[in-house]
Amino acid sequence: MLDSLAALAKGEGRVKRIHALILGLLLVLAFQPVHAMTGGELLDECATVEKAPEDLNDQQAIRQVNCLYYIQGVTEGLLLAGKNTGRFPTFCLPKDYNYLQMARIIVKTLRERPESHHIQAVVLIPVIYNHFFPCNAKK
Image 1 (cartoon, helix red, strand yellow):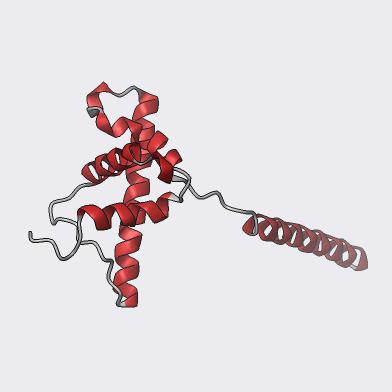
Image 2 (cartoon, helix red, strand yellow):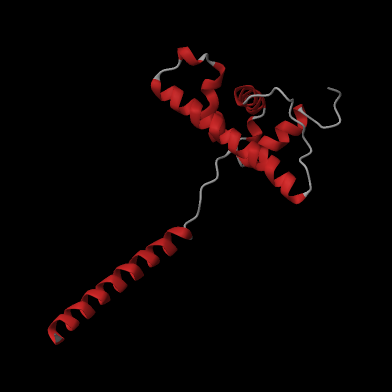
């Protein structure tokens, strides 16, 4: 009986060490710096939005999907943050917008303004929206 209790205690010690190791690894990973996409990187990722979907190879199609989901995530995040804080964004997207159209506007703007390529894309997107879709514009 004592032998089985000792074996159980050793097993619990291993479980605790494994849990401590996993927790330590998660803490180390949690504090790693995160890379924020720049305008230049977004332009590279979104370059395919100017092509028709049927003209894309598999790699280009994946990049286009990544681009559209990134823009969708930033856009919806900005809109949600505005609703939750009571401070709505200073841009007003058209009711019938889609993310492919938004991506084409963003790509066109980034091509015309290479000096902005070093700025974080999450900062550039609302600036571009503010320029093209100000809330005070007549609809």
